[in-house]
Length: 93
Image 1 (tube, rainbow, N blue to C red):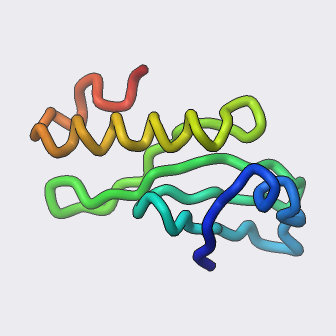
Image 2: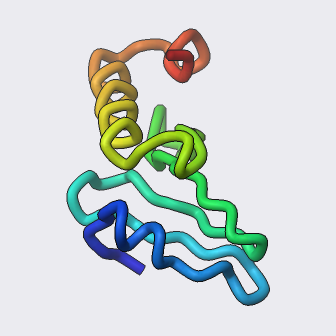
């Protein structure tokens, strides 16, 4: 499902009934939130790197705010666009 993520909309997401589900952000392509059956919500960035789809864990809500998750996703996307070695320090803060 795709929607414009806001703090209020994230808070309102119910726990998954059965298998986890993902909500993709309309404002930043590749950013999405996984919601587990326990109600845990984690931000991820999906991006094709060297022909292979990669899922990069950004952090857990609410410890990491939506604003900070978008900033971190943009930072990672910028490093990818600079052709950084994905195996190096791309994912570290």
